[in-house]
Length: 179
Image 1: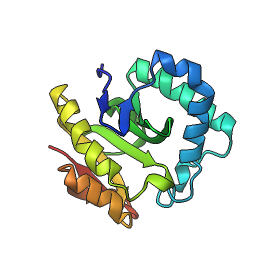
Image 2: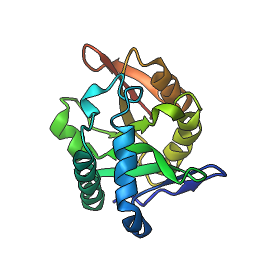
Image 3: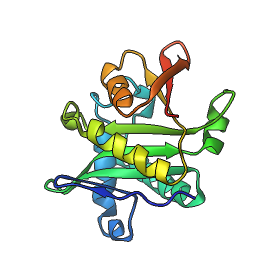
Image 4: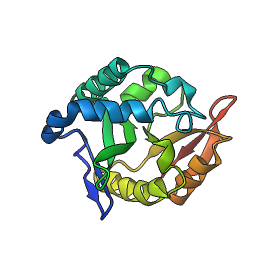
């Protein structure tokens, strides 16, 4: 099982759901809804859209259970001064990936989402390499990411974190991997 990742600088805190987050569950739900209903965030991934706070609450509850059962390892990007979650990082286990993708091998997969207002602020460019290093230290050295080939910003973030293009994933997306 993955050890929780905790990264921090002057502005951001990357963390899993923590016991103290129970006291702010409602705010966390609202932050998740804000991210996963944002048109800028979802431009290339419209299928991730949440349509209500109830869906966001169910998403959060499911991610907490999935984390503790080893299926998905969700981490939040919290902005310390704003006191809110501005991004989500989801590490998907090979077992879950094998249920959704038809591939020769199944690495861990990473997905990340930022609030529209945080896009272009180089947040993921700074966070992703540190996260990858942490995962590597835990023995997870092969990580995949599926990205819409028109999403140039996400491709650049992946490339700066030493992901390389592997193959076309489907008609719209490409597969990138670390090694």
